[in-house]
Length: 436
Image (cartoon, rainbow, N blue to C red; front, side, top):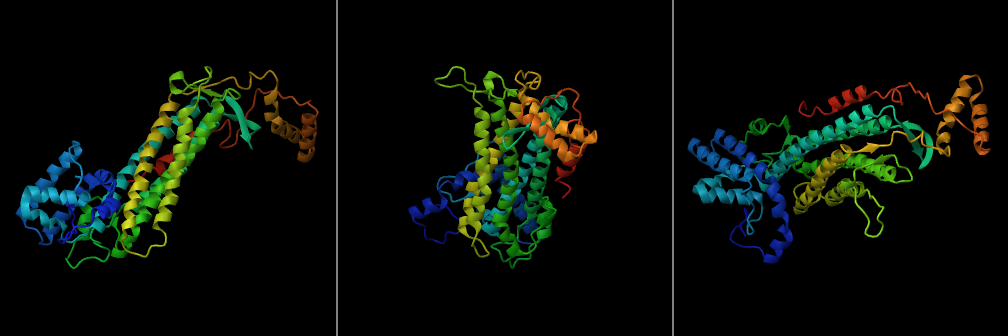
């Protein structure tokens, strides 16, 4: 196997298989960032005299050629190569000879992988940010479109008080604002340059870490070399926590959709091609997309705990088990993108029942308005507790009825005052990542 640490003795094939296994495939996702990091690193090496101008030109051209191959999908970590770092250096030495061996001066695979992962996660967070914004915008538009359509609200899975589709869609839009703050916080944790920390204790070369920080578009660096290594695991945990919050919002919304699609509720519908059937019951229209999304979001939420269990009880410095972080977080990020896409796709085709309360021949939704009647009697002068008791007696006796028309709640965030413009302003502020 081709490794950067080979000193003439090869590891057992059993060791290779156990320690590398599927890591090559995961490393392919870091290829673009490994080359970008190397391009910045060699510019810095030339500036401090460790590379000549002609050597920099040769290496830059060769690395850009590899970068083009990556973008064209023509790159892969070979079966007998340990990792992405070994693969890039191997390609360089094949193509430009001994000058390719100079590229590793002043760095370790430890700060190399740290850099690759941070650059990768930075782009992943920006992509997730944009996907969340698209879903947020759609939810707000649905909220405005259906703001006057009433629906039952529930607590303890029991009918509680009047709600509306505007309130329901708008609630999940605002929930995404909180999730965006988490994504923004994770981005701030990730967006620091670790390059130059080497194996965790710096280097005797006069490295210009400020230069690579600028070249790689970081606003700042991990200043302390040991702290840079301590960020391995913490960065991944911050990202897992952030996407876990997004997943929790989608999980709850998916559960709502599964419930509201049930004929016993009949609040929402989707076209037949977005539902599935039963192998035995011809009438079934199953909410499989939402059920799978609910389950996948639970898997995403579990990533943070897996990372915490992997990284706990470790002293400072690099440990090989950190390699397993990719196997936890990368699939979770992929699931996150898929779930956000499917949520938006499904909502673009949602159909709502606009006559839920009107189509109520048995009067089962009358009880949604008990609080309205209590409040009406209280406003008329009856003490609140007396009004509450009198309405409760009418409910128990089967005598309670309420005119469902003319309902109007005016306070901020209520049925008739959704404050969607205020929520949009909150989101615009939360989504400004680049200003960090």
